[in-house]
Image 1 (cartoon, helix red, strand yellow):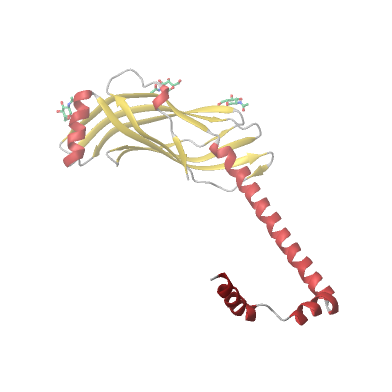
Image 2 (image 1 turned 30 degrees about the vertical axis):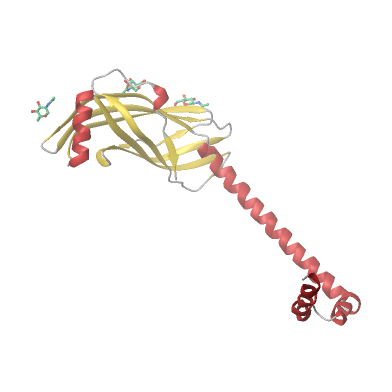
Length: 221
Ligand SMILES: *[C@@H]1O[C@H](CO)[C@@H](O)[C@H](O)[C@H]1NC(C)=O
Ligand SMILES: *[C@@H]1O[C@H](CO)[C@@H](O)[C@H](O)[C@H]1NC(C)=O
Ligand SMILES: *[C@@H]1O[C@H](CO)[C@@H](O)[C@H](O)[C@H]1NC(C)=O
């Protein structure tokens, strides 16, 4: 078997191997061309690698400060959450703390839009005042949603609402749409549009303010 296979391989590989003459020509006659081409290719590869590295570094430098921003809901107070005749009457106040832990990077919050959701439907909206957050600083955003809004709950949503009405603990989601810029020394970056999502907060009606641990918010792009 082995003896039979060996010649077969040679036969099939034969044509693919260039005749030895060509290799000699490249090695002796036009060795410079070959080397130059090789050097040129290496340079190109090296330059591309450096550029990719720089790009990754820049992206990392820009995104690291965002990912390190710490967020949580510090207080939530719900004093009204009444769903009657497909109208939701609500009064919800929350404090969301944002910590910028960076030593050198400041953050401009150029636009802050807060939204509140129940059963994936938006019922509250508030635009907050833009501000600048210095490095190593914590800011507290006060959001207040108060009023009434048509909100249709059907099937499971209605079942869930009635269950939550009994328990007095409502699953409400908060979302902040941001437009931010970073400041490093005198340099300001372009605008980014991240979102802060505080999903599935269990908020008690007329209860004591909800304490921190289960109220972590996530930053998304
Ligand atoms: C809910 O709102 C309706 C309509 O305003 C009102 O009649 C009802 O008393 C309210 N229920 C509660 C528990 O506040
Ligand atoms: C948010 O913080 C402010 C200032 O600390 C406080 O007066 C307010 O009652 C807080 N809001 C809530 C909903 O607890
Ligand atoms: C942090 O912010 C507060 C006001 O929000 C300001 O008084 C204070 O100077 C700031 N600290 C730094 C280090 O920027």
